[in-house]
Image (cartoon, rainbow, N blue to C red; front, top):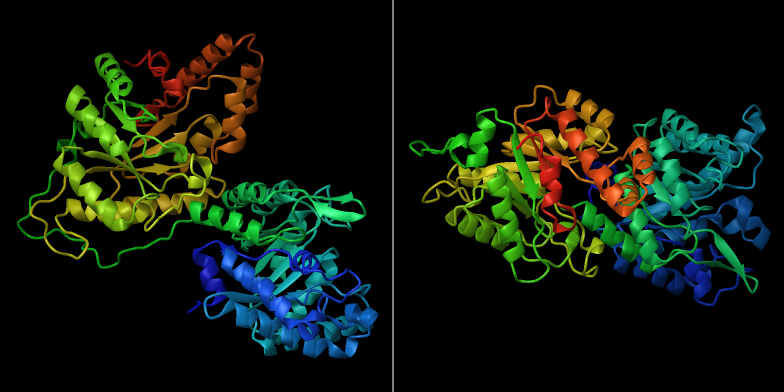
Length: 609
């Protein structure tokens, strides 16, 4: 059974469906037909489209009523059928949606020249809006979706009208041109503020442009409004081919941008003209990959059973002891091999141990590529080299029971240091159709591991002995929504985190601002360091890795390199400079190892080891 819409939106990203007109046209209906009138003349076709979007994974479907107001229907001679068309549109969507999916009543602008200073114009607008809105409500909608408005004044007045007469959530969406502003020149930030001020529950953008233009506008809106933001672009700009407007953007491309929208702060995503159920499926994968379900096991014990002796943090591992003693720690990331031969990783561990590195980090399925499991490589390194290991544990690939078994097995084999992360989406890696499990997120799994440390299992039963994990978590200093990131960071600490490792640090201004925000935090923070090896690598990190902001001056230093070897040397020196710059403010550094070349992190750490 669905929650109230705004309550659901507060806890998750919601996925709307795609284009209705595109699907109707694809089913043989010519453009001279009134598509809204098909709610009465061909209801089975409309229901079929809705059902396909439901199967594709939409959380919300929109009624086929975008142009079903008196002004727009008049040109088809259907102005007296406004109520019947809208009620039928809402009922058809409701039937397809069932009990779990939300129905948004789609309302577009009428062809009215809105003159706010004239009472007659406002009265005419109110009559048009209310006639359609009341019919949609009678048909069973959950919320209003005002979409494809080019005149912000008309949209503002429409929101005001609906707020006066109905108690349903309102999404107010403008459309923008290729220049990023509304038809009348209004900037996205300006209309976001105006719509919030008159009571819109969600503000957003739809239609006209493709994902790239929408992303740029979204980034203007997020800093100026507290409202959730919705983004529903076209499938790129249409190309006229043999007299038909064809949208050339692929579903896969749309799915990639859906991730960018979510990372940039959008709470609602969907598609407009040219998008289909295939696009919705691609966006569904993006939502699942970036927004794992958050099972919080509220019944987990929060106290320790009397008489149970817990291991102090400093005694859990040499790495934990170094942090407890206030020593500056160094760790290096060793990516598991693509095959089953661990010899290179073992040799790297021996070299790093001899050089004085405190521990090696073993990622768990980094970038969702097919590699040896982190737990197996961690155990091999621990047993065969004696190097202290930080085993990453991702929530993506195993269900909760599987992760519980892995955690207990790791403790039995002497693996103490864990870094608990949510995990990269499968879409990024070798098997894009693989299923992401995400029974819990990193906060939930940290809570589970902390409960084991206190001597209880998930059912609250006493374990034969408490586990002895030293629990770490990730944190992203460059998150676009830093307030949300810091909120999650505090929740991780409350769940039991004992240290944190950051995303790669490139921009010292951003990193220092993050450190200022967490001043007084109760756990040590280790800075992630990524040695850049080429201009292309720098541009990739800057453009494709969420939260990794590479400053222009670093990009320019890499660009000036005369050769590949010189670029690599510059990148290593930049990483070493970053280590020195952050050294006084963090508990240690984690250095990545590009191309598996162990000399790279040793070069970066040459002034410390």
